Image 1 (cartoon, rainbow, N blue to C red):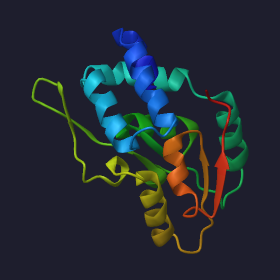
Image 2 (image 1 turned 135 degrees about the vertical axis):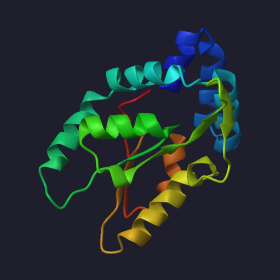
Image 3 (image 1 turned 180 degrees about the horizontal axis):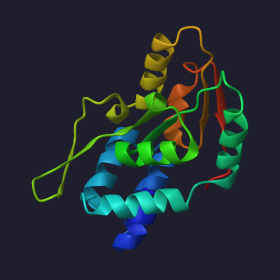
Amino acid sequence: TLDLLAKEKGIEAKVKKITNETMEGKKPVAELFANKLKMLAPSKKDRTLIRRIALHNLSSEALDLVRKLSHYEHVKIGILSMHFRETVEDVGSFIGCDPALCFGLDIQHDDQGNYTGYSQDQLMAQEGGKGLIVMEVKKLNPDSIVVHVGDSVTDLSTQGKADLFIGFGGVT
């Protein structure tokens, strides 16, 4: 989603370079993500565009998996994403996720709606944040089996914390 937003803003090459550095593990994820957001400076006005991009670019394979798993009443599905909380909640609602299991990054804006940053105190903003959130979910649901499906280097922090980790290779 952020790479597609960068394309809309005409800074695709710069942001893609940061994405590649992140995926190759060249620098800490939190540092690179902060740089990417600073470069994109997503305003409140951009929220509509970001939601449209996210909803129009959902993986059909992921949607099929969610639909199949949703038929089982004991299965709860959530989203754990480095993207903005509002977008994560919108996508989660669209595909039928449990709202209590949808986690994203809370970003901040000034009175004019300009991006000002995000709090580093959020679990998602910390290095290994997804793994920290999985540990919290497990604490709140001690009898559950947590399966994490991920397609990014940021998902690797859930290995050893989720009961099962599945790497999804359908996204480049």
